[in-house]
Length: 164
Image (cartoon, rainbow, N blue to C red):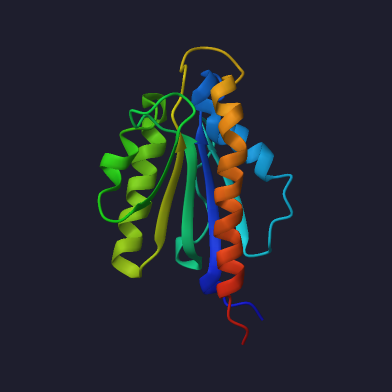
């Protein structure tokens, strides 16, 4: 039996009506075609959807995938572990996602009081956050690298699973 402590939640943040702000959903679509291990759950945290409806205590790792303004060139990827100040990290997420930011902040704080959960942000620097339905070429070009990051995280998790 697989230890639940090795469960991973991937949360895709975004607004598909604002081009690169829909990066999370674009990546989610790509991830959904992967052969994910049974210990991985994926959640669409797009505008109008409830960000996370699972039991946060089930997860060892929460991975946020999204557009993120971190000051690099469009398409550059930020891969960071969120240690204590989630608000400053979430400030780079496009402003239309404020309600999602508030929800994630509350979830993050709840995990700090119960037990350690590793929070990771994988963000692609957006080129354009304006009305439109397609992500930019910069996001499309960065996507395979993000999938590699996620694959590495999943491989690490599978390797670390304990059999009881």
